[in-house]
Image (cartoon, rainbow, N blue to C red; front, side, top):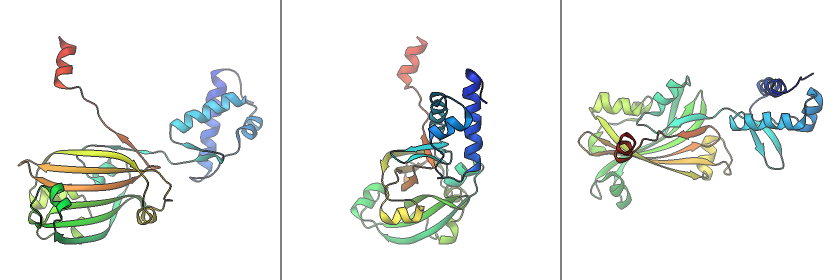
Amino acid sequence: MLTGGADKAAEARARLLDLIDSLPTGERIPAERELAARWSVARMTLRKAIDRLVLDGLLERRQRQGTYTCRPRVPRHLTIASFTEEMTRRGVRASNKTLDLRRMRATVQMARQLRVPEGDPVTRFIRLRLGDDEPLAVETNLVPARLFPDLAEADLEGSWYALMAERYGIDIISGTAQVEPALPDQRTAELLCIPTTQPCFRIQTLVRDRRGRVVEYGESVYRGDYYTITVELLPTAGAARDRLS
């Protein structure tokens, strides 16, 4: 029997966590009314515990369907770091599958993205990124072919940024990222094993080296049920001076 006050909320949370651990991801948990009766706890107390676990990313409410278990979302920090490095830091085994690698002449749009003349040779590669063998993202990268003249599919098995630095001597110093919510197209949804109604993040990146050259343009689709986007906010120089004055 659950006992009073904060203890009731703590024990309700503990029992919910035990329940979540016993169920597979995507499984519906019993209704609030049933759990409240089973554990002799007020429905309001139970609801608050469920609300907190929803915020923590361990449960998901689906309109008119109930509450379901879900995996904790992985924070994706928007820094100049490779997928491999990001996953390794979080104890997840990173791998990928190259879906396409080809050289082509830059279209008007490609030339604008890479800041190269139209018709210049460029290399495009598309990879499915996996964590612990589960598909997490589809990444499309576009690079100037003259900077990576002998790039082969076997080169793309590990960290792309490490390859840039160690094999091609490219020292990345800056980049920009644009993030927007998006729904996957049919092909992307199939690759990520999600429905086309599953919200995702589309991230467009532009990376420059120490010489100021654009060395990579990328478009990635990340699963919204697996990631949260984390951005570090820094004050402008003027704001920092105002606080110190």
